[in-house]
Image 1 (cartoon, rainbow, N blue to C red):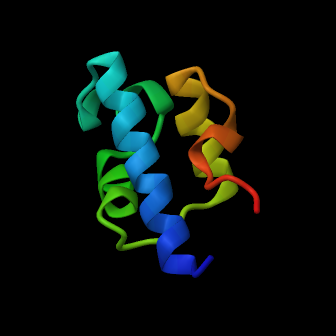
Image 2 (spheres, rainbow, N blue to C red):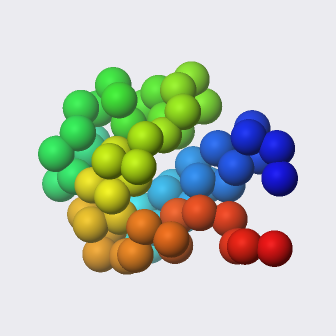
Length: 73
């Protein structure tokens, strides 16, 4: 899977999971302990996610980090 497709999938998963929680991007950023700008850049595909960032977001959403990633082939 191309890198851009992986990044789009991750952003889509984060948005979907946050929506299921009824959370805004600001609430997710605050709960995950990341800056709103950092989360925004991730969700708008302006930056590549780091594993550390994904771990923080997954923990805030109470999901496994793997739940943010595309399924393995």
